[in-house]
Amino acid sequence: MSISELSITKRRLLGGIAVAAAGMTFAAPTAFAVDMPTADRDVDMEAALKPGALKEMALGEPNAPVKIIEYMSMTCPHCAHFHETTFDTIKTKYVDTGKVYFVLREFPFPQDTASLAAFMLARCTTEDRYFPFVSMFLKQQRTWAAPADNDVRSAMLQLSKLGGFTQETFDACLTNAKLAGDVSAVRDRGAEEFGVQSTPTFLINGKAYSGDMSVDSMSALIDSLL
Image (tube, rainbow, N blue to C red):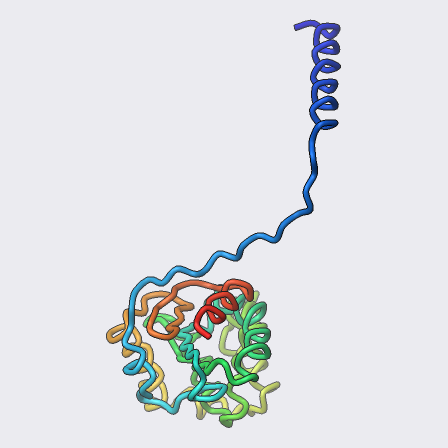
């Protein structure tokens, strides 16, 4: 095709578009429907809500109509993203208003000693500081889980000092063999009894959902259960 033929064809094409556009009616944009998360399987929620080896770390009213158990890992990027972008809004919108009871459970994978250590440190804080400590570690995940010098322990110590630890309390916590076993038992129970295989996994009113959720998708799911 020559340049002149291309120009004629282009003019005809643009003219056709202009004519077509003249007869079009433009409607106001409509809101897109939010995709409802799809459950992986059913779970026995009554059994799931029974505490295990460690005291339950939970927020909200235990008798709330919607009950959520999150199994997560401290080194999981998807878990960090959920807590950075979704959790605070869900807490304000549903937990603080008595609509959701939210339980956080540890799920450090068997070979992931960094996640296990981070959970142990969170458990060594006072109960009222557990969630803020977990949030701090998740928001700073890259700085301690994959430091430039590969010295994970030192990076964890520096971050833990911001949470009130000293060198002595840090070392004492991480050498607590019983605590390490109890945290691992929480993970093992989740895997064996409720089929948790990945993080984050949410158990919500008798259904299991794997993967990160946005504010909109989790809100839509919660609203459907109210």
